[in-house]
Image (cartoon, rainbow, N blue to C red; front, side):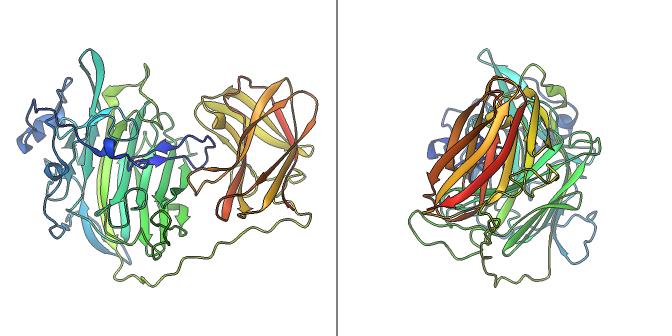
Length: 504
């Protein structure tokens, strides 16, 4: 859950997730202030399950060695007798959380200071008031208190580092997230030895689930990797009237040599099989590095941070609980590790040379899938889009807080290093306003092949033309974006005759 950008979002801002953006060495260091209070013991578990402290002082500063196991011992791999079998798999380890206290042979409570990564506000404590078992669930609870006259937040980060590390398998976690501005629950994985392929992101990271507390109908699955930094992300939107906060859901990944698949309630929603890692200026490591080494599981509830933003007056800490019903890790009897990196497939241009499909908007199509055009709303943006009379009409009810809050995109643009490109389109609005156009790199750290460029619209139709040269490595996943949020206007926008072509 480190530095990340929502795949569907278009801002240059990278969003930080639990592993970290490239987490700087300064943010990795724990404070060395003198201890003021001892860590709670296992005897506190039962009492903490029924009542949580409302004021907490700082936990004693501890080193990484003190918060996780200090020796590289074989994993415990305990199998909870309540865990059901899964056809085609052997159970590796599991925890149904049916006991009275957290099983510390499987899990660590990790201490981290506020701001350790992603500008998050919480202190991750080892207090049982922030993590305990109740009614067959692991409860990770965020608590708001006061310290030095300021709001102070504590929560928990539970990891299996050096206790249940594994390579390849199917991870299934059933959980229910809290709803509220600033909450950021996550289920994710990091390598046991982050230095094996190099510091983050070269080491790799697998995010099984992240949900923002202010948008609890949308879950994200992501991988981070590479040098230069790259990521891939999918998302799963609930449309049946439920949310990830109103019910428990199963979040799972199937991690195999050369492919990782993400599911919600057994519904496949994202697959990744094209990644890399390398030291700066060196050749890539042998595929499927970095996702061919032991990883460990982490569960945490962050408060605030660069992606969700801080809590506000609407945030209810009475219900700030991330509930985990079970964690189950299965493995197939064997895995074929002799895999090859798939060749990049570049989408062919149309017969007229246009790299944009349906750029003339003469075909009706779904605007919610990943083929051709896609209309997206984020961060307070509200509106709709429809194809009408050879144009797309984008109506906004709320501009949102980000440029990408109201967004029209077309993915899978073939971008070739050294080629010169031309972007042309017609646009107009019901009243004077601005928009932003760019070509981004969703799987290459959201760099811009064509930079964010503001264009001015009036009620009169106008043709816009921009030329640029592609200077980065070949990419079959470029993305044209029209960003219409946070522009000081909700005037309806019309876009027509969109064209991206290679020019000599």
